[in-house]
Amino acid sequence: MKKQILSASILSADFAHLANEVNAVLQCGIDYIHFDVMDHHFVPNLTFGAGICSALRNAGITAPIDVHLMVDDPDVYIEPFAKAGASLITFHPETVTNVEAVVDKIRAHQMGAGLVFNPDKLVRVNEILARKLQMILLMSVFPGFGGQPFMPEVLEKARQVRQWMNQHQLHAYLAIDGGIKVDNIAAAAQAGCDYFVIGSGLFSANHYQERVADFRRQLR
Image 1 (tube, one colour):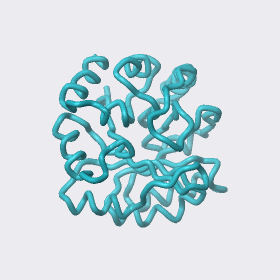
Image 2 (tube, rainbow, N blue to C red):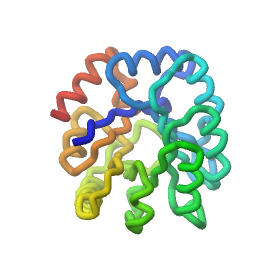
Image 3 (cartoon, rainbow, N blue to C red):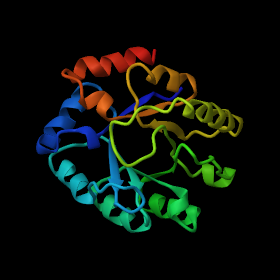
Image 4 (tube, one colour):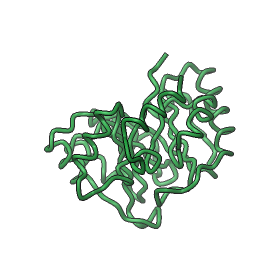
């Protein structure tokens, strides 16, 4: 059984002290660091690019970094993030004309590849492509801004995707991102998710150690 992964979304962190924030949550048991990369076109917000990834690597951060591209042209971000030290890149399939070619390019740059599906998008992936993926990421909010409330209707989608993945013996992570809090992470896990992106649900805490422990208790 794969370990259940907690990934901290730095969109909710204190950017004035970002390296310290990242080190703090990693020391408290967070597994991955999550980047929400937005271009103000695909979503109505503008965030950060590969330079922040390089900065964290230069600051000594060695934990895996997963990059969620919410952009119109994900292809142009692949090489910069590879050079910056990213571990995994996910993108929205509707933003490209050839999904498999983009997946192959990510993998050719020695990173894991994944696909992201908004709450109103069906998960349609052929089995050949699915076997190349390290992650299928379900959004439980519409992307663009942190701090949005969790959409519980996404849980049924997660159950259906997990059933399909089990039927085809797919070993990718089934991730969920958006409004994940201590009071709903167990429901997401019961629906079949094993990778949880947490933003404000983590960084709003006064004590990261206690909050991470609360999340882990809910996953037992």
